[in-house]
Image 1: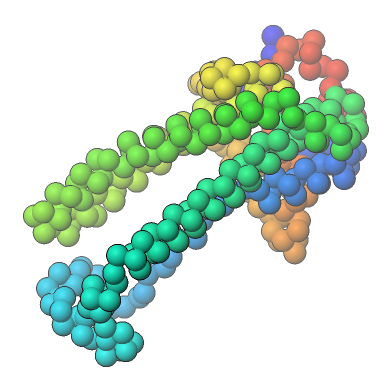
Image 2 (image 1 turned 180 degrees about the vertical axis):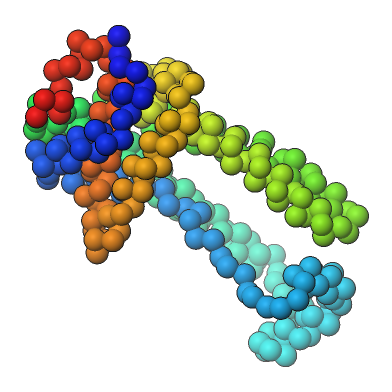
Length: 303
């Protein structure tokens, strides 16, 4: 029988294991951490901050609603020397077609670049996880293992796409009630309903997203280390998380904090802490999914 979830995901032992693994095979693990960090999906991290000022913020909303749009356009022209009305008069069919073509071209290039990064990450990720297991079992690791995930490349990429679609779908479903309330608020001109919409949206989105994200978290491990197909990886990861989400969330939060502490070491330290944390999480996965006979011989447990 595998170890209990709490035993497998013991935070102190897990992090100590990650440190020992980094000491045993520093260069392959560091290179893998660099490649994974540099291909990390970091979109959506930069929230803008609104301007500050006194008074009720909804006063600005009311004044905006009462603005005369034509007068606003004139004021924009005074400040910038640009007449917004000239757009409708000067853009012909040819110019519009050029603008549309440029937008489509930019979006196409962005999509191609995104797919290339995803493909490269999927290729490296399989080998990176196998490198963890190699170090944990033998006390050493090779660059060949790091770049040896070609056989699971398509499944890894498919799982990442599937997980992304599932999480996006859950996010959209979770915010729909908030959007509906906001729509009613707009129709009846009730600013207070916007605050209600925000609370409802966050109240549904955060737990729903976390619940599904935790259920899918170890799908990459299931593909790379257990040879699972895409749907099998989803099911395998979901089964692992079933009944263990609170402990799993605590484990990922604490190890995540350790990971981010690397930013304090001139930023490049994040590669060190990432290698430690990623290897620790792989060992926890192995202990939780392997029988005692299959995991008792891990080098990391006896070094």
